[in-house]
Image (cartoon, rainbow, N blue to C red):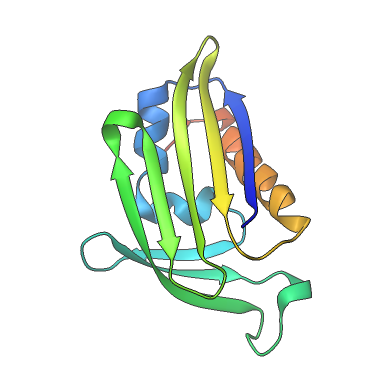
Length: 139
């Protein structure tokens, strides 16, 4: 199973950044391809995402899914998983850095694609843009 991992350091308070990133309603603001995210029951979340052109078949360009979404505030980590044929799960972690905070995203999936690293990079760039916006990190 391929693992994809990327990181980026941004000028942000790690606690404030993690608080913002862990709010389900903010997921579409930074996760590449995600267009909707809503709390469901317990640790479940319902999401809608754009499907890459190369992967589109009968999806009409979007896919809806239920996933688990757990927040580990002590370790500033968010973990998610979707029960599908790709064994898709991942983690986002915020760690203190000299100049602010490092955001790391790791994805595990049976699906191999060169676009996955690009999507993670786009997600991290979205986080950097949110940090740079005025006022920063507003829900």
